[in-house]
Length: 429
Ligand code: SF4
Image (cartoon, rainbow, N blue to C red):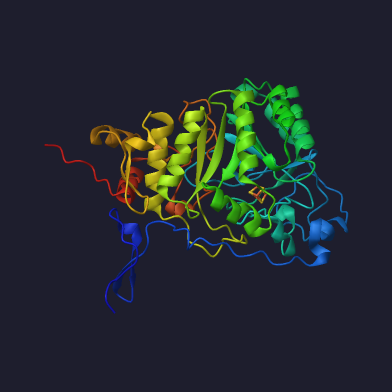
């Protein structure tokens, strides 16, 4: 068999070349729309719908709940309970464990929790409704990790002891899709700001626009939230519909998400609103960077994730975003968000891939070597504006092939990144 070439990239690098039976095979260096089709959700048996299975047992909650410790998830509900990432639980001292090359996380990510779970069905998400057929809500993996459930009062009491010196630079409430999520978000937020000065640890809201009104957005601001983001996730209306809307029997609509983001723009003001975007679900690099530009032009920011096939999700059979695609978008997004480069200064090939970044090579080289562009993106912490508090350790990749660096990349990391970008260090004359 000869050398098989699928879509060969002008920027193909080592990560895209595989050897099958001794033959070199070049795999695509981007996730194309046609490839990234989610599975259709199967019907949930009646006895497992809406958390029925969990609620039937009615086991009272007892302190911290570690996923998979119990056969049945206890009857835990927000606002009394929230779930928090493994990284946040380790940092808080609620759980033991260590994270690869990270001492702690700088963002306390909280998720509202209910026995019936999130009522949406997003194709890439471990919390999606279709999973009730096989896994209780409190035991579901989300962005690659488990989420212990903890009484909110315990969390507040620990952080309130010394907010100024807390390892956390920010707290974030993720709302999920549930009829109670607005009211419970207000309660959790108020519980926090009653005891912890939001100037010491600012709060972000990762919203659920589908059930929110403008008055709800305003209320989060009035209760002390600093930044309001919308988890747009999909980069185009078509992809949104396929992964979060009709395509997977999920209730979300692109227009409602945009309308809520524009309300947040009015209410929270410049630099205090933005959108989450997942790269590699079938959009082109041009499409996602155009969206990044649109957000910047509105006065907001983009927070980016690299697509990873979450176990148990409707996209778990699909490829993670190739590192070369991800690095190009990550670098270009940083230039648009923080270096005043515009998408129309960049050039793209026929497949929409970035060909040039719109700045001088020497400047580009300095930005690559600084490494910040390749760190996890998100709401800022206390170090500097372009360094996110929300470092989400290994939320979008395994530590063996890091997508978003939850720490400052070292020399050896930059060398790998340059290889993925196919931008070698210039030889000095
Ligand atoms: S609304 Fe959020 S939590 Fe719920 S399935 Fe979609 S992405 Fe997951």
